[in-house]
Image (cartoon, rainbow, N blue to C red; front, top):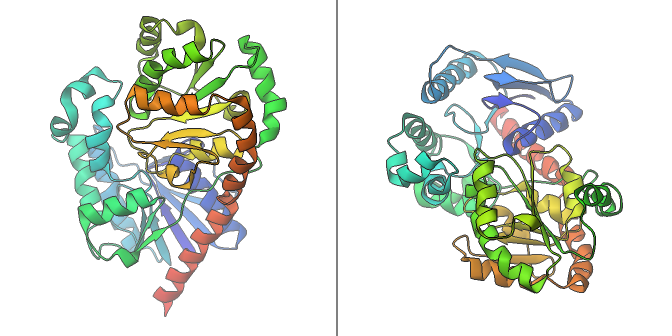
Length: 387
């Protein structure tokens, strides 16, 4: 079959981009023809992948989003694809994957905690008057309206419930296929290799524990709550360290916040890194008190690395976490609630015993199995269309 995968950007990094690359490769390996319809791209995920670039001149984020959606509508009408799969912010597809969850929910839960001072000031209500947010909300409503697509793919029950509650339609047309983790790249072996080397470079010695926070847009991911819970954890574990990894618009402001809490000597801000497997290898505990993530790949990456997790129920990946491998807290958790969860995982013996369970749960959610389920669904839908 000839499958068109539609996303504004094809790149090497990013959650949706990782999914796009993985599915493209697996489709090609199964002998299918793959075209990525995009506005911009980097290297092809597979030499057999063809690109169609729709890059009409448009000024401003809202104009670019709407122009791309309209160009996609025109393009797929003129082509003979067997299946068109949209990964968000278009309305002309047979299958839509709600990769980032519902934008309306993001605005309500996470946007007010954006690192942008303007974003915090605007809040979720006023943010809706932004041309860009209005464009995204309008496209989302059109794409998820009953009958707009033959099938909706979600990566968590969190998103499935949200889609049904906001947009209605037949729940039977919604398929749950959770994200899968690269089990070869993320592995407990890094603890004795690159993880140990990273600790040494940072001057971290002793029993720890080392807590890892990894994500872009620290406010959305709940770093403020973690920083405010960390002083109490430090009193329990004077040698504890916190590694903060990922990109943010205001790193100086976050460093200042750590300083105001008198924990700056225990916190290492490492910025955006390409060796995240080493970061998991250096960690004893992964913490993500996010306000809203449709899934959060990082939770599975930590588990695959043998690292227990403390994650909020604002992440879809929390649905695979049980007491054997971590703790789930409310997305509205206070610093006291997060502190209690941290404390419960302070014991090195408990973390060591949990490592095998972490890896087992990750192996149940490997990327190959997720790709197989996805491609089987695509083949089923294409076959139905031909009949």
